[in-house]
Image (cartoon, rainbow, N blue to C red; front, side):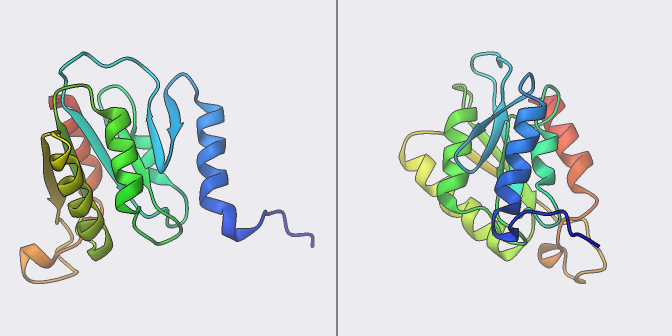
Amino acid sequence: MTPLHNDPQHFADEALAGFVAAHPDQVAAVHGGVVRSTVSRPGQPALVIGGGSGHYPAFAGWVGPGLAHGAACGNIFASPSASQICSVARAAHNGGGVLFAFGNYAGDVLHFGQAAEQLRAEGIDVRILTVTDDIASAEEAERRRGIAGDLPVIKILGAAA
């Protein structure tokens, strides 16, 4: 049997590039992820989401009207870097501040926190919401990861923005 795959080192980047190529009417590539290719209302808060790409860069699929304004996509099972998150947030920012929403994973908490500090130093109002719905991962709510609850939270935030 002949395997049909590219170099695993480039999987996340190639999957994201393919997604952007398939949906140019909805998303545009930026360093570290994607943003809406549609115009957002000036002064609208920008919802930026993200996380590791795991089996595929899923967060990119949650970018669009009524959902997120941008998604920072890390590598396979790795959080996006603060640099990637800042890049996506700057491209999504439309004068109304930025809201970061992500699951409660150590790398995401660290890197989104660093990105928030950097953007605040640049004068951008940044707020953070960490999703902690996974009751099986820890007894204490603040230690729980975000799993299935990410999507409804992001949908509600996107609709509110």
